[in-house]
Image 1 (cartoon, one colour):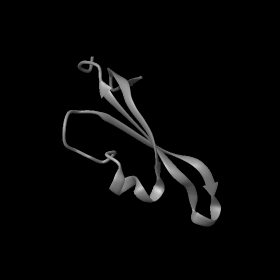
Image 2: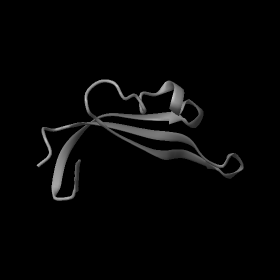
Image 3: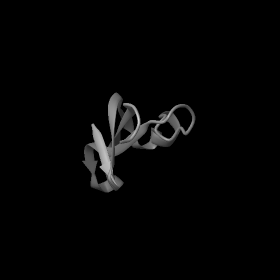
Length: 71
């Protein structure tokens, strides 16, 4: 995947894709961990939509590492 903006772009390689229960996102995943090397984290909703609970029951978390430096 490649991100670009303001005249620069940077390629990323996806290294993990996880489905995580909504209630466990903040405590059981590394999605918000700010230690270690630079990486890109993408979080979106997935699973069954539960209007009585206010949304989807899971999150999809994608972690990607940069491929070199921005150009």
